[in-house]
Image (cartoon, rainbow, N blue to C red; front, side):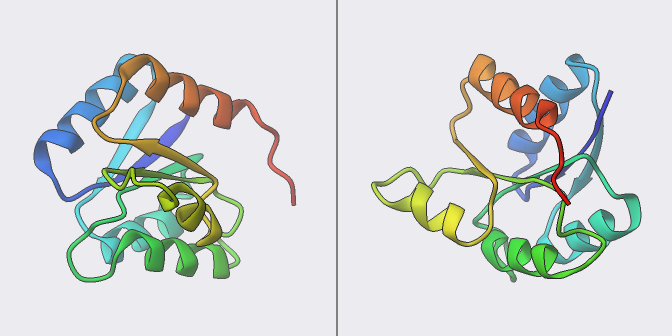
Length: 125
């Protein structure tokens, strides 16, 4: 069982992610904006962060950059969970520091498989 932080401002998307993750046996923490997500990540040290890119105020790419710069959170994998699915978006998102990418709308089996695969990878110091 892993603790996963979901940073998502859209209520239906947050409810769906929570349902899928909890059904798979994970503990879910939730934040509705980047600032709250950063604070929760630093305090709780989740195993994984699912980061929406289009957030109010600070966007998910800025938040990811801050997480990757901080000693307490730099090794936590961040998977972008986003509707940005145009050519080049995945490369741009990975270049910004995200460790993975899941496009919305979410395909449930792929969503859970991506998370399971990421959690199975050993963390490198």
